[in-house]
Length: 108
Image (cartoon, rainbow, N blue to C red):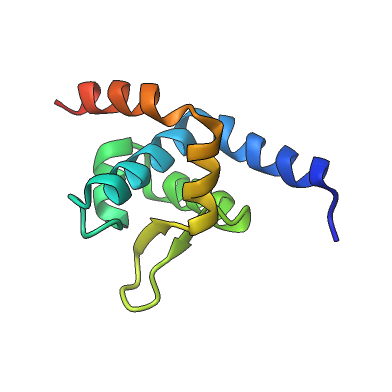
């Protein structure tokens, strides 16, 4: 069993990277509003928003999956969503409100 320090170290490291934070915000926004595929987002949609090469996006999604923040939907290959744990951690950190406003402003 990993220590709480190792767990939070992995989580905070994954969340603190700019591209991964943007991915998490897109998925969090989808979960809150249900606008993008009912709380999920396709790889191609994420790539349009994040604007990085496919292999870089795949790398960041792998990191987020390995930390348990994001999962791939089983019924639709290439579609991603926040895990319950990921959603809860983002809410618990209390950073989502301000960042969501910034993300939504950037989006329009």
